[in-house]
Image 1 (cartoon, rainbow, N blue to C red):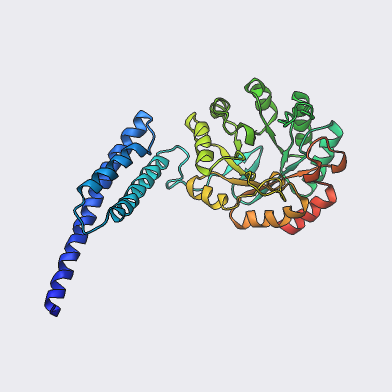
Image 2 (cartoon, helix red, strand yellow):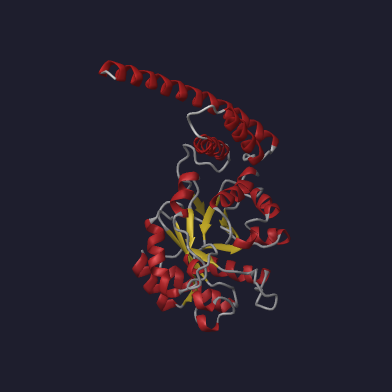
Length: 349
């Protein structure tokens, strides 16, 4: 073969490459129309039966020199690309999609959230007026502006301490007001919404309720910030779609909280997924908080994991603080006492 013949063959290959690129782009335009139709009609993006039919037809049409396995491998990649394109287009249409939106920053009870990193701290459960006032006093003296505390406690066992209910919310509100703090507390039941709106500044949705879509829709009709915790078995896509339930109803004051997911690991309470922080910030404009208490369940890991969370871009860290963790009515192993918390702040901020 002469150099001229080789150049001619390469020129023909270049022409075919351009033709293939044009055909693939035309195919993607059709895929976009399919995606829009499926989005309107609520049909699933992935149709394995249709993919199998397409592959079978292509292999029957193949006259070589490519083998059936090569044809299958090439078009599997084409189908994967198409599915990824449809999924991205679907995400782009969500209310929670970042697009060109700047980072969300909220003013909550006079305090900014979403700009400089903030600590959210307080007892796992509100146990008494004296307890929550003692915690609020110490936290506020250290510059903490967001007081967390559980009034309604979702517990694995029905015989465990379930919280003080509305009375606990009143105690939390009184302690926060006395020390210029905002209240962050979990709502479990739509029947408690009026009380939660009265006493809380941030309505927290716990990991167990991330899939409670009726509750999410109800919170979406309020004007209070909602801190949504990731379910312990939830993918990031499921987490973002849960936030979409809130935003779709009109409330875009959302805070996303990574609190660890369940894996095979037994040395920590959960496995803290810090890759979620930059991914969530890329996909949405919302502040991202990392709960290192539930994420690890171990006080000896909270400092390094909080540092890592902030380095990954988290705008907040959540921890639990109790005057005497040994006597706490819930989760005593992961609550810091006052001295431990002071050391935590000095090391992390």
